[in-house]
Amino acid sequence: MTTPRKFRALRGRLAALHGEPNPELYGAQVADVLSTLPNSITPLESPFDDPLEQYNCYMFALQLVDRLEAAPFPPIVACNSEFVLSLIEHGYLERVRRAVRGELIAYFDSDALCHMGRVVRGGRIISKWGRGHLYAHGRWEISQSFGEKLVFYKNLLSVEETIQRLQHFNA
Image (cartoon, rainbow, N blue to C red; front, side):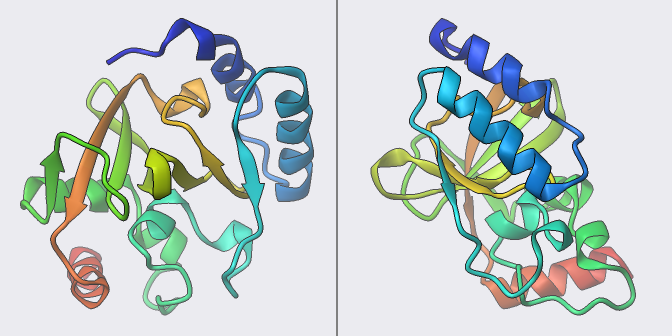
């Protein structure tokens, strides 16, 4: 499935912001893009104690924010695309055809996992963008740098089992 034409300009403009290390500046730049192009993206306040720069899209999607210890690795380093790919390879994340509330959406560039979010009501997605904020968005209302292929997954693990797998993965 490739990007529908109506999202190409938005995705390109968002990709130009990729890599901004300052969460506040990134949020302001995203807000500027959102005010100039048609979209349904909504910035969300983070409900977590962990600061924005200390968690990533994978931690958010797998519901691990505020649940991981900093030893032996910082959680943002430990919970990465390689870990998520290991969950897929071992069958803990099961590919599904349709987006159902509570399931995961993964974005790939070729075979490289680039981004992940959670499906919410109405098929909308909530995901964490880089060092920036959480956003509610449509399937294709994301940075082009997150990839051109999307896949839905059901997590067959509980949060506690996911944490155990992460600890084992990083041992």
